[in-house]
Length: 348
Length: 75
Image (tube, rainbow over all chains, first blue to last red; front, side, top):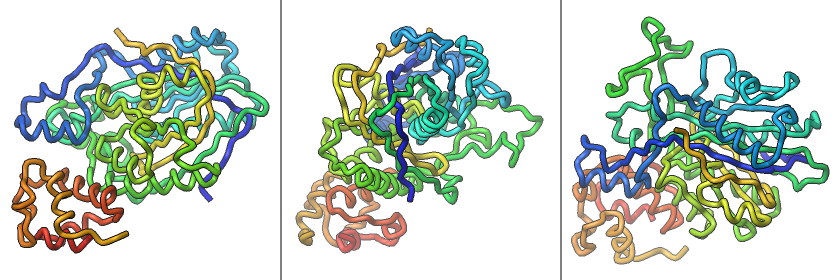
């Protein structure tokens, strides 16, 4: 049984921060125009944001978090759970979340740690922070989720380079007796671990001289390697299965859902999932076109960039599904009401 | 699901192969010759089966197809 529920936790707000610099896919000069047009049409990414030199994902998340705390009127000292979901961590060690506990001014009784998940990271992250807060009755928590994927791909990788963009997000959760239940369906399939992988630089395959800075053009073992077809096959079978199981668990149908926010993988995959599950176009927003695949940030970024108005002004039945690297997936059914959503932040 | 006709099938295929006229899609047409065949085309085809024909086919099954007739037989 892969469905479960968490009690007494409400999502209160979501914020997102993207780098200021825009990179247009039309500017890619090593792919011929016809091939480029076909690619852009099918992956659905026209442009994305690229992080500046010297800036990290945690900086983006920190800006989102600070902005969110301010808009919520929360004191940093009142937050005592902080989880950082990212494959772009400031240091090999220690955890980035602990560094952010200090930088954000949270108290020393804060539970802080990282979860190095990618595409499924946000929804998994919600399950972990909500589960922890529910069990410990901690009152306020922050889930930071993001990635800097543009540094992970080779600029010469025709399939991966046009796809990924950078972003950092923050989600605020609060303990609230009798809150609508958070429902989840999740799982893992490690047999597909090589489908999306950076093979070199970890313990299995240390890099020569321990140097992790790579030449960004030549694709080597320190870059992201992606088997698009395996990921596609996984996406179109596992995600509909997960969502159907979750809807059944929550005794809902696709018509009960206001918005279905999926991890922004690529347009072809996402649209195939949408159609397979019979969701209408209006129910399924995309941030893919302007921000690309932003890994763990993609679901909350889409909420901020596309749904700020409806999410902040009424009650919504939300279905979110993160899936990908691992292979890993987690879907979430949540009722939200009048969320606090600051306008999208830009990191300058 | 009612089995679609070859006519209806090639109409859908035409959408996949963008600029191709469906009249050129005969049962013996080798579909991989119609485009600079890449893994993206294969994914678009699998997506088409899922969304238009309500049929899950694997890339393995697709690899074994050569002609439009072979594709039609998967529906």
